[in-house]
Structure formats: C-alpha cells, structure tokens
Image (cartoon, rainbow, N blue to C red; front, side, top):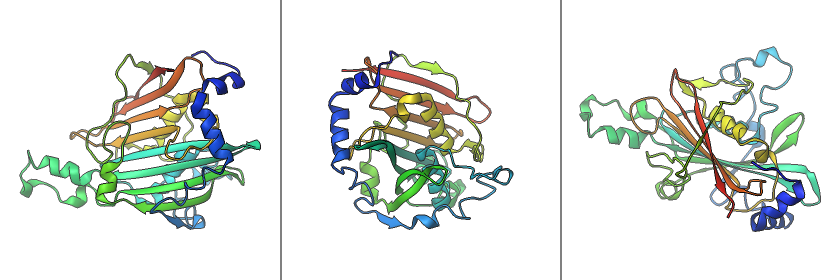
Length: 305
C-alpha cells in the first residue's frame, strides 16, 4: 500500500471526501440521531452498574481506571447494546461507524455509530424442521427470543474516555424493515453470510489486542471483540476522521454468530470505503472463528476507480 501526504490523500479521495466534509460543515450529521423511528435514550442510564459488571469486565477490580476507557467507539457501542439487549445464540450484527471532525477544528472529533442486531434464532429453528421432527426440536427459547433492534450513538472523547456517550437512541425493527436491510451484499435477516468480493484475499495475522472485557461467551467469540479485530486490521486509515455523509457510512462491519449450520461458527466482514491511498479505493477484511481453532483473517484491496 503506497502512502501519501495528507493533502494528496484528501485530493485522491475525490468526490466522496469533498462531499462528506461539506456535509459535516453544513451540519449534515443532525439527522443521524435520534433518527426516523428511533426514541432517544437517557445516556446516564446506559453505563451504570448494570453495565460495569465483573462478568462483562473480569479485571475491572484491578484498576482505578474504567476498563473500557480506551475502547474505540464501535466496540464500546457493541458492549453497551449487549448490556441492554442481552446476547442471542443466533444473531447478526450490522455496525456502521463514521468518525468525523469539525470543519473549523480538526481535533474536535465525534463518532457516529449504529448497531443493529438481527435475531436469526426463529429462522434457524425453522430451517431445522426440514430434517428434525417438530416434537424432537427444542423450543423457540433455546434458539433465542428477542426483537430485531437498532441503536444509534453519538460519542466523543470526554472525562478520560475515548468514546463517551453524547446521545443515544433505540428502535425496534418491523419484519419488513429487517428484511429490507442490506448486510454487505446479503439480506440482514437471512441465514446466508456475506463473503465480500471475489478475488485473491491475503491472509493476515490475528492482531494482538489488550484484554479489556470478556472475549468469549458460550464458546463463541464476543461480537464486540470481532469488530475490534477487524478495526485493528484496517489500521490507521480507519482512525482518520472524515465528514459525515447521511446514509453512506464509511465503515461497515457485519458479524454473523452461528447463523448457518449446526457447528458453532462466527463469521465477519468489514468494509472501509474511504482509503487514504492513491491506488486502493476500498479495503475489505473478513474473519472466521470456530471453538478451539485460531481466528482466520484475510484482507482484499479493491483498486481505486
């Protein structure tokens, strides 16, 4: 990957970067939150005692600092959603992330994160009825009971916290809304998981990351950790702020937990659509994790058009 000075990278970003910065300067992020159909949530109720538990943060008692103080916004948002909605055995998460900066002060940053969780349990159970008699199949509660739900967060550095919560909102999706959402090429509420573009993917080493929260739940990786790994593999580009473009998030992550088949398996796909490089237009990262096996991570670089 050929690197450039910041001014050259901005020019090479073309219309996407120019329009995004203009939108930011014009207050283009105002419509993000609460968002159509979303209800604003009291942020003071999100990260209290119900969130900071020994189960979620096993090493919390050993430090004077908050365990999630330096977590990136989408990772912390995933943990916050988990604390309010619980975890499902069969689920898909669609996470969008835009790190923006003020037009008059580039050091003043804000993160816009949307976490949408789809309950795949009912569809997974329905698929098993083709091979397992209904009387021998576990009840719906064993496959996960809960709504398709979406959360939005505006977050910024505050009080020694990398991603303090400025505002938050929540929405339960209708069946039609869930069916209409796209998860990087596949329906979000379907069992099939996206693989990304065809081509020669490059294997990558799993990133070495500090342990700040529980990494696995019932033998499956914590979805927040999966997003953290994809973000780390994307590298410094993912940490560069741009402007806000409504409806076109720069970073998208899709995590599918035990979505298909009877083996425990978590797959994930991430896309960075604004790469600060003169040759690469889009960066993709995907991963696969199964109990007892090392994580399989690879990347794919799409040329700039």
